[in-house]
Image (cartoon, rainbow, N blue to C red; front, side, top):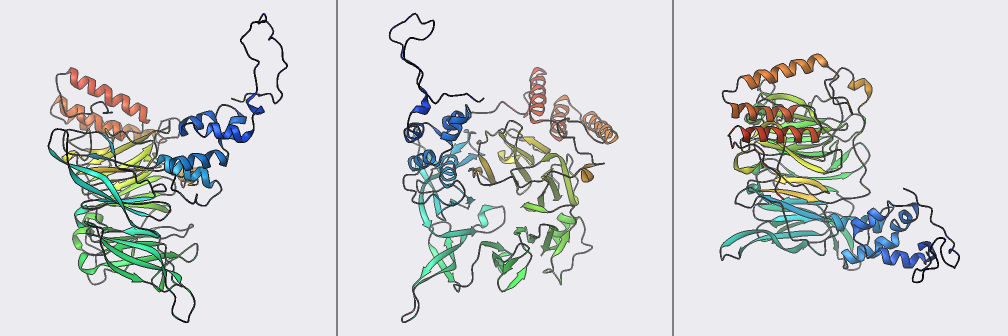
Length: 551
């Protein structure tokens, strides 16, 4: 909508047809007011209302997008913020980062099954990364401050002692670039926190003044006490820290960008872009934009068998030689579980591999996969997470709302709404924050980090027509398959699986899994799930199917 707002004041006198009524003032254009005054008034509105006002006309779009407005909003949201940061729109970026920041969690046990928000550090400049450990949670903001969110035992209103998560915080350190802990998905192993930071070192007597040097500091996660520090020469600059290897053979990787195609590791050059650990295996993702690929190291035969289904190529005498996985495109990020993994390529396609005993690969069955297998009905995830025997995907629907999908074992409440689990990705009963960007699941709790960076551009590319031809992926906007024969065979297999179920309740549960597997829109899946749940209740069964979302 584009309203034409006059810049000149309308003539005095009664309006036509008003009959000279008294008490009605003449219309005055808002553009007659000084721009500074308009910006000052608008800055008192809530952020949501400012965004809505900027969509009404061209004039308000320019006013609501002015840096002066966002500077006042940023000062109101974060009065202690001294620097707005860098970028083309530093004040707007800083204001939105602090408006959307939040750490949410949902406990799996107990009666209360709703999403709660942790304490928000007043000094934090947005949330960039978070990591839950055995007892507490650590958050890194965009200003390089690492916060220590402490859990505590507190008394409830009924006089009972309960565990309160992330109820208070302290600043662990400043000048942090990155941090890491034990890469295994179980938080019990995360006893220490390794922080890559920059510290000002005093100058030598008679020499030049102090210089900023990178260092690695080690903290106890239980108390936040620093137990170790190692400082590097000022010429060595690092960007990322990763902890890999077994407990008895721990290795610390310090990475810094040298060029577009390689990263620096220690004193050598390796094409590394992302490093993670899978059980006792290490995965490395190269960064060259034209090639890409995933390289892995497996240290134990058990993990190798879970990943590839065989020990044919496993060499116990040469476990440090990176081997490549066969993939059709460049991989952007990965998620590593105990004995399975997930990969997301540059086109937003999800590939799963490894042990599938509980259906944690989301392929609709419980057959292990010895090579990356695409999950066709999910694309362009915001985040992917793999745990002990289940997987989670954070996705965005067509109306820009967020939803959380999960598959695998549902024991202990780790798949809310699906206690029996599912062999395909199904929508979980979790109210996802609008700006959720990452997630993590522990034995006791599900965490989601909320933050929106306006300068972060979409990373996915459109799949070329040459690669899309002949695949069984659904056509965009049509919902139909490009391979009718394959779709017909899949429907026959679905009917066979339903027919093999002994009871009506089992058939209902199997049908819900099949709905999650089929390439339907999110609204269509919700409709079928709710309809099946109504039929299940009408048939007299109060099975463990989905229930309405809890507020």
